Structure formats: C-alpha cells, structure tokens
Length: 154
Image 1 (cartoon, rainbow, N blue to C red):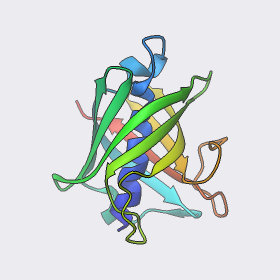
Image 2: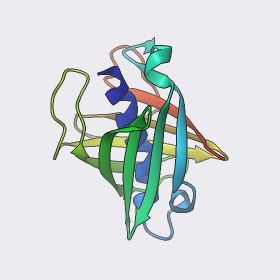
Image 3: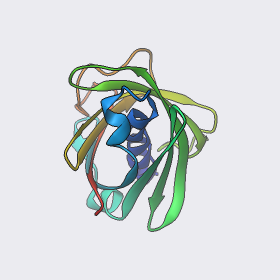
Image 4: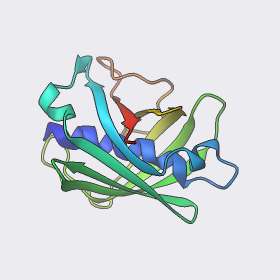
C-alpha cells in the first residue's frame, strides 16, 4: 500500500507537463522518472517503497498522462491538468484512472491537488487530497502532504 502513496506523488509530478505550451514544465516532464525518496507524516518512506518505482509521463494535448509502475507492474494511472503556473512551482490537479490509497481505498475518479518543480534531472512533487494546494514541498508531520523526489532515467 505504501508504494501507492509513492506512485501517487509521482503522478502529481507529472502533472506539470499538462499545461499549455507556455508552461515551463511542459517540456521538462515527459519521459521516465525513477523515485529516489519520499516522505509522509514526518517520516521517510521505507527503502522498499521507493526502490523500483518508475513514473512515465506523456503529453496528450494540454494534459499529461501518467503511469506509475512498481517492479514493472502498473500500479497507478492518472491524468494531470495544469491549474496555475508559478515562479518556483506549478499547481496541478491529478485525477486517477487506476490506483489504491495506502488505506486500500480505490482512487479511480478521485482528484488530488499538488505542486511540482523540475530542475535539471530532478523533479519534486507534493500533494494532498484536501482543499487548496500545498504551499511548500514538505511531507512533514501534520502537513497532510506527501512529498516525492524523482530523477530522470537516461
């Protein structure tokens, strides 16, 4: 179940590519990314929840299609839409087509709000299922956010 939380965040990262042609992240997100770390409720994700998790992002019009795999098995599919461009990060809405929450809840049709930042070959994604968007990249205790960091696969 923890792998889903990791993959969900990956989906949030991919959302940046869902914007318009003017979106800086549009040209940066498509491709394959490997998770290198994650945090939720002030705790780092266990190594086994981070290893072998990849996220593939593909631009489809103004949207970004995201597929997250764990050990080459698809665990999450989603569509990301740009909500607002920003100087340091962009805001996105991610709607799941497939996936399960850490609590075993089916995520199909559910939408989460997130932020993404891509710098070079590093992508940071932060999201939560509540109202509004995260204000910073954190997975700290009581933040109600999940944080994931990915490196581009070359």
